[in-house]
Length: 277
Image 1 (cartoon, rainbow, N blue to C red):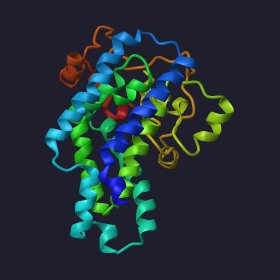
Image 2: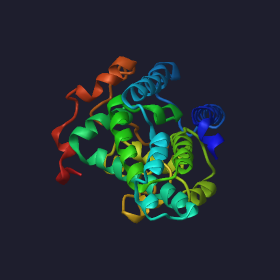
Image 3: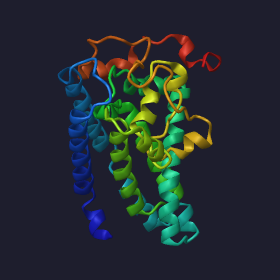
């Protein structure tokens, strides 16, 4: 167990690189949609933002989620540590509750206007493929890490559960953002256990009511439980428009332009109003 934790960075990087490569190959062999922009226009910034995010997180946080879980265990912080919960119970419950926290955070980032300004960079991509999964503003990543650290400490989540959750979340996010084709019968079965590309693609629709649905990144159960699940896009997966209606600039694909997007006044006031949803 300790050996796994000691090699956390290498394990996470290895899993990330492998899944990314597999998804790129899958998209090349069996694409679901024809991309509206060449990969050469979008991928440098979408891939570059993950490098910026990684540097910012390393500079901002001396301890990341797995390290914080270890510190909480040493200090006896958190629910499961206080209750002396059996490892198996703390392990399973942590995986479920961390995923619920990510779902809840995602909903809040859509509902709160100033948080939406940070998150909308993820939605301004005019296409939907595996690199969209990496497209998050550094300020959103910092806030997300603060929330994650707080949840890890509050739960007293085991470090190995936190590491596994991070690996699974990264892998499923790249999977469900993939521009890949699954047989419809397989998609129907899989989406009871994991968020599929067809399920999550609805979330990237230009239609507001579809953007505000299917918030899950890993487990699909929270959307069904809390009434945010939408089965299919109204225009169909090949006919739907990806992105945001008020941000259609095909030239805004450079890394510097992505970093500036939260500070642009491109959005109509009605987008954030509760009665306009």
